[in-house]
Amino acid sequence: MKQTNNPLHNIKLLDMLEFLTEKYSWEDLAGQVDINCFKSNPSIKSSLKFLRKTPWARKKVEYLYLKSLHK
Image (tube, rainbow, N blue to C red; front, side):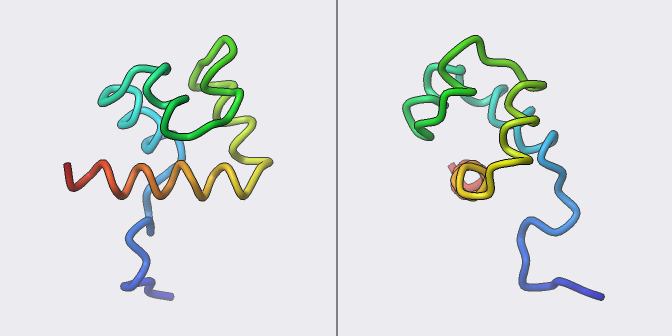
């Protein structure tokens, strides 16, 4: 099934986080997306675990990722 209208199709959460952490510091990420996994002892691993279980937070990270692609 094609998802031509989905800009996140075939983009893994890991890839998004790696892109965002290269572009921004953890402190900047925490300022833009107010979630503890970016504030308290942040890591890719802990962020992945949290975001996979928390749809509202994942949506915010996906939005920031899409917005950051065009900056």
